[in-house]
Image (cartoon, rainbow, N blue to C red; front, side, top):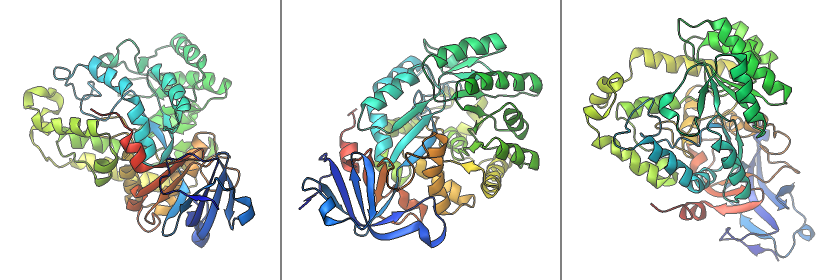
Length: 467
């Protein structure tokens, strides 16, 4: 008989999950749910779904009772930044607290804390992440994740090709580098391409005095290097005009919502023609505002799953005085609890309406959090993002597709992960509650399975670094 697996930390050559409700995220209607199924995993891949013949189950198979539980693919976050932590000290170009915590110390902390950050992602059911731009250290992060069982699959972009400089972030390995010419683009592209990035990323920041056509040409230059090497071009462009310029220049991924105006027919046509991936990142801007106005408070999922060290840092907000914060945000910060302005609320409404329109037009939407930015924590931020996507008008089933099968498309792994299907890698999440009824239930995780290795959430959390 197969052995029962109350403690799933034991590794086994095969895993059998019995009597579980399987969520087929790629399906519609009633067929999305397959109830009372058994799932057999062998050699890290899904072998059989449905009825598993007794003779096909070896004696050393680890069995999990799925009664009253739900199984779906592991979540994929297509937009994170490992060089940032989510705490108030991580972006001195936005909130300069370097007198309290020097940026060098924060940067070193992020490097040293990487094992815990990776475990935290996996404990949240996230079996795949894309770092959408950071220092050359990103390539080391990818290598470390590949060597570590307790880590999601990691893809990376290197330093951002930027229209603007960020001197306050420039230590020995800057995450953002300004490019002003084809020669600049070539130098940075060649350095990155030697390390085989999964994406090249442009930070498309446009000011009224800037020449949009010249900026578009720079984006096209980066795209030419990316596409010549079979790599997608990802572009940060949050205005309709810059997003359309990015699409004209060959963008494959738009890493944020269009937030200034409703998307138009030209945008939607180009996005379809480019087969673009659209990552709404609805929460990240709110995270900054909630921290700046001292409205930020951890969700229940963050209290349970977040890195305790970062949660402790977030409490430092109460210790800050007016003199600690830059003048440009002092008015917001001093008036604790200040409600967002009408302009801020309108940007949020536009972003949500645009997400719904993009989804309705059949453009691939993924879940991306931009985790690591101030207020957006690595790991449990996915649940904030899911909730906002539902608030925008998507159903829980549609959000789950964005967070799984569509994420696999963005990673170029659509034939390997993102579905509960025979032959696919066993990157899976076992939930105690039905996420189709409420997206809040997506955080009620019992087990996480990565490449056929079964982890209990408690095991992953208890193995994190202390202090």
